[in-house]
Image (cartoon, rainbow, N blue to C red):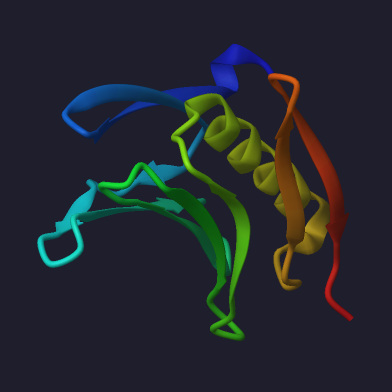
Length: 129
């Protein structure tokens, strides 16, 4: 994807500034912190879509990404690790953005990201039946 189609967004995790590279038009809602669980929540919202991505990050350094479908109300976990990797978040959102542009917006997009040998492997993207 060309750099002029990406926008950098600053997001704070554990007092550290992280810069995420989002597709043009996407919004990153200011993180909220749940004082009871020390959980930080960020919503990544694409333009004119029927879904958004939820990032949850807690004090034990556990990071999860969820795909949330506005039509069905389903939330599917797409990433879960004991660390925050901004490049994984960037790749995940870029993949979801590309799939949406190919008319997958009305379907629940499921895919898995794993970390092996320091490289991320994007595997299996499906349309729900």
